[in-house]
Image 1: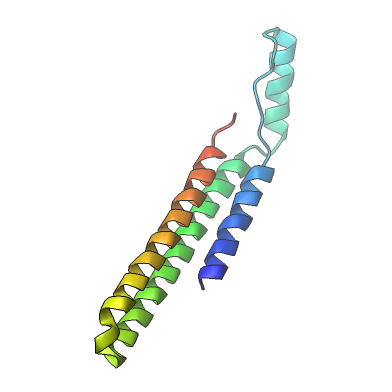
Image 2: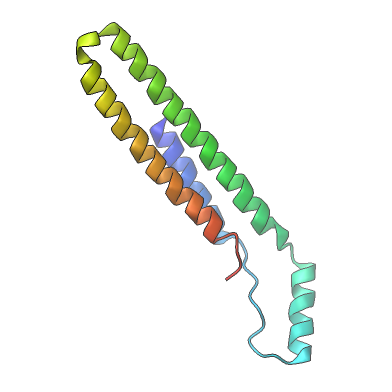
Amino acid sequence: MVRLCTLTMFCLAAFMIAAPVFAQAPDDSAAAMAAAKATRAAAPGGFMNLGAAVGAGLVILGAGFGIGRIGGQAVEGMSRQPEAAANIQTAMIISAALIEGATFFALIVCMLFNSPL
């Protein structure tokens, strides 16, 4: 499950990098501004915001499922072997922290590529 969450986050990050970004025209002439505005109106620039929102949602879902599974399996393991509860709990907390770190990275990537450069 952790591999699936990681793969999903990196695929979403690659999608966000490939999303189109429309920058302001370099010169301030009226013709260049009108051309840039027409290009932005004709091109689907709203897909970038949609992609960031969907990407952030999928990242949160993947992390939630992954951490939920880790917690459930840890509790099941503790109930089967109570003498190993401390070791299982330590491994569970470390694994959950690693998933959270990857989740925060993916969310930051989604937020950074949400705003035009």
